[in-house]
Length: 144
View 1 (tube, helix red, strand yellow):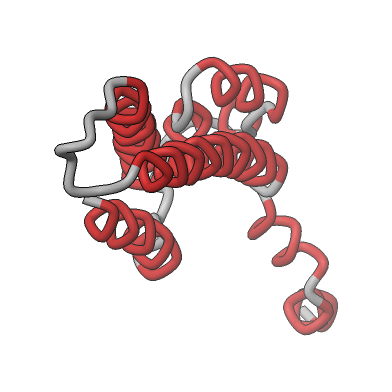
View 2 (spheres, rainbow, N blue to C red):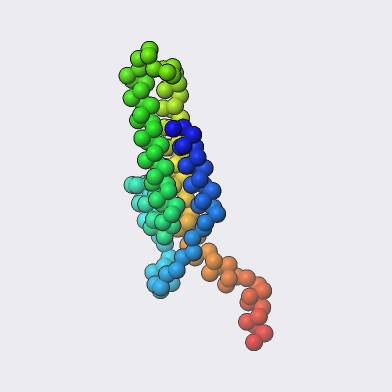
């Protein structure tokens, strides 16, 4: 189970960086700009909701699934620790370590989601700002 969780978390990180999503939006520029405060509030409420607000569906759903999986594993190990019997294949300390590990994973995913949602909302119009301030791009316009 632990191996599955490690693989899923690793996959989320790799896929979110490899398969970045292109935004196709037909709204006006004022409507397109994302508000970091809204992204923060949504991400604090539900992990992954800030990414959905920022039109990053794959990352948002992956973050939601990872958070649910981490919390489910935390709860499973908590139950095994509290209801420990000597006939279990693992020691009681093993369940305690696993419970604590999944708690830290869930907390880390939560804060990663909040930070990522706010940063993405701030950088929503980054491409346009770079194009406007590109000296090579502006140089061609001045000569015309």
